[in-house]
Image 1 (cartoon, each protein chain N blue to C red):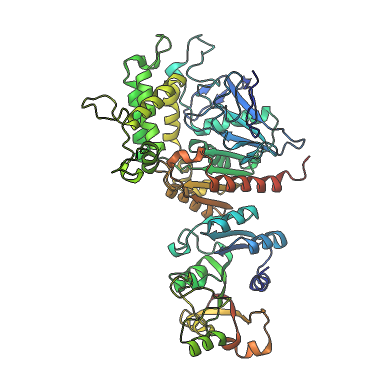
Image 2: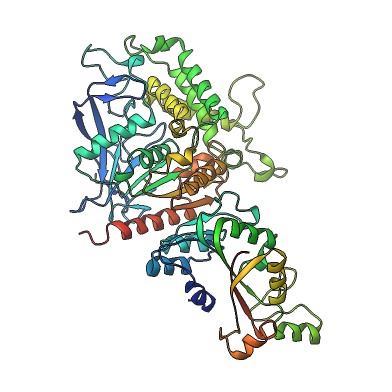
Length: 197
Length: 399
């Protein structure tokens, strides 16, 4: 399992209801279903991913996150997940509001653009960073809203969102003391467990 | 001469018939004192009787969903593309049941049957039956077959509506509802098309207020017209352009042709058939009129018009699903304008509101409403995978 998902799963209560926004091939929901008897629903727009979800026995709904989540009732899930999808949304701030309307808690993970590698790339080459982790050119990237750990902290403050846990890990998904000390500089993936303030 | 049937076909099948003496109270308040049900089955029921799937047919369908009837090895059942060994509804895994609905003309009691009390054809006196009544009669058949619970109830269009009714009325007897190209209820536009179809039948001079069998005739023209109108609503503009726009010349491509292929190469400057599409509709309408009962067509369209499970729940369909216990799979097709994707999304939203587990797919397809009957790869693989999941969840340990 992808290491950020490994961290996330610890925060999910057994038998709870989980909505996974951009659930990919359903790996996490499938895991949560079999290990924690979670009642999960995933939203996805990629055809291949949807097919994988069905094969994995995961409930999946073909729905575009950019068209909103008004069809979901307030408080109808314990946890709403948004893993590695934030940066691809048209209105990430509005979606986070929606997550915390629908779920008691939210989990958001995103690539930290404030990482030293991105900074170095931009500083030395003067061009938008392209790496194994973020392989797209600026004009064809699905990632249209990059942010840093500091940016996300600021957004949470503005929105009065309470951060239950913030975990920042490097590419090996290790949360060493160094990463903990300089998260916005050393962290590559940020993982937030949030709730309404 | 031996005829070889496709390997994945369920082969030669024979309809079965059961008689029911238990009166069936209908939603209209009327009672059907006794009735026959004609049905077919494919595959084997396992010893735990947990692998049964009910197929519900739509407006013009019947019990012959798959395989071939003896003597007619050209035309397979109406959903043969989906039912068979290794197909979406895999007869190696499931025991599949499909019945002709009451009021139909495939052998189950309907307007073209004789009323045992009078010895005359029921004709227009056959009571109006609704989706709810059909499902009630499907329960009767299920009990007779000693099936405790369906692994899935599956249907497209009007068939999908029956699957929904199962989920609402008999939550303990259905594990999965698979509802394809359906809607929570018909819109004014849907009803309008049905009314044109009904009017073309009832205004045919051979209709005789529905007693045409007594008169030794039948409203062929009316039924043909009704089917022509219906058929247009099953196709999409793009499907028709593709189907009737094959002529390519120096100045015309398939794209610029707009589906305007001529039937005989030139315009007639009269009022006869000029275009291929006209000739196709005439052919489809006529062929249909020869094999279908006009009173049944009227009944089926009424069952569609009347379908609205929210009526018992202050108009809130989500409340109807509160007691449901099954899981749902819904599929819609992008060019279906009879029951477009928005209608399926309404259903999805009501199911979510009721806290139900749903899988929903919006399949890109050019074929309009008809798509649900066609082997569209994405639709078929999702359908097959979902049923594999059903089998895994319900029947895996069962021998």
